[in-house]
Amino acid sequence: MYHDHLITFSLSKQLNKAARMSSCSGRENAKVVIVGSGFAGLAAAATLVKAGFENVLVLEAMEKIGGRVHTTKPFTENIIEVGANWIHGQKGNPLFKIAKEENLLCEGPSASKNMCLPRSVTPRDYFFKEDGKQVSTKLVDQVCSHFSKLTDKAFDDELKHKHRKLSLGAYLDDAFGEFPLVATEDGQQVFEWCKRTECTDEACSSLYEVSASQISYYTALEGGFFNTLGPGGYRAILDVLLRDLPSGSIQCSAPVKSIRWDLVRKGHCENQRYPVQVVCENGQSFEADHVIVTVSLGVLKDKASTMFEPPLPSTKLSAIENLGFGIVDKIFLFFEKSFWPDDCVGVQVVWKEGPEDKDVYESLSEGEAWKKTWFKKITGFDTVARHPTALCGWITGREALYMENLQDSEIGDICVRLLRSFTGWSVPEVSKTLISRWGSDSYVRGSYTFIPDGVDGVKAHKALASPLPPKDKCRGKKHLQVLFAGEATHENFYTTTHGAYLTGVREAERIISYYTN
Image (cartoon, rainbow, N blue to C red; front, side):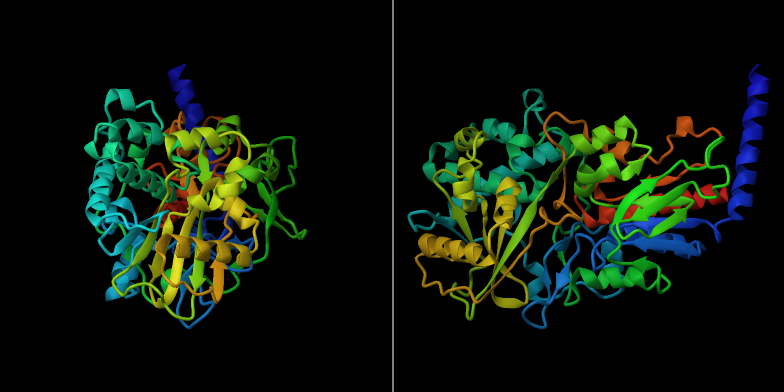
């Protein structure tokens, strides 16, 4: 019996190989369509082309390439990053390697221009309270460094047993409660600022919705957390990847409507040579041996149930539903001249009743009252590299999505009012604004992935990354018809550009080894 099984297995392996060779005559003729031209899509395309694949087409829904990378020059000859901003970590980071080899990293004062986070706070960050008084830098430093120690425990998987089942917000509240500064009003308010700011790192509406134990699966690469790019910005790294692609291999303004897969099977479309068909909203259709889907988790949440025919397996649909995909927006304010002291790198706003205060969060969790105070979710306004008269405000979650529906002028006016009332400085009117709207962008629907409280992140990332048809259902069918890449499919580097890049390479290598073995 076992011997018969081996013969059958060996025969089916040979038949599979023969089918592979006859239908595709190797990698040169294999047709690969990649959906999305962010780092995952471009990395997959470049890897396949370098390996000798000659029929690689990238379909991009937007008019521009890059996905959540959006380097623009709206006001001067200097760039603004509307999307991805830094390369996180150095050791083992393929994007840091490219940037270093191509001389694309920033040197000089701009290189140290970071967003103000608890772990990177300096005396040059001015913390203001609602009454216009500044919080002492000593207290800010003490609270922020303690907060960083507590978040490090979660990232390093060193949580006490009692904290493992809690949300990140509930764990931080409990652990911070043992800290002497918790008794002071200023200490409590700076602690709330720390939680509000951590929301930008997690891309969540609130830390009370993020798992405390699951974030330990995220791996921070060694080397500086913030590596700033030079005057070409992130676009310069995209251009390096584009150099490897033949002209005409990317089609922009081509949103995909449906992906029909498993078309070649016994008694069904037997005259059909290719197992997958990709249909665009403009009616164009492309046949393929393999399709790599690199759209954001936000787009999958929006479209996955209708985009695939036959439907995606329930494990994949559950992963799409269970993983979180949050919104982080930037509010760029340009002034005719700067009004802040030379040594100031940012104005951070500290509220009496900020949205990440436990009682405030609970009182606003139901109903619409939070909309009236959406601006309280702004963490502060940081100075902007290469733009000496600009500030950048950060906002996340449902408040960010609400803000996206407001006019730029209204957002600008509210930010100026905040700056005036908190600092007491003479703040001029804004001359220009640039505001990201990642949540409303139907081709992105958010910023990056987080693991909600109660979700098994590793299981969900793996389910999302697994190719179709599933391995156990491949007998007599063509393997690797639909593959998945993007930051949401990486269990350790989700949220990052290098995570996206590495998943694109991973899926390309899956296809390459299919034609090699």
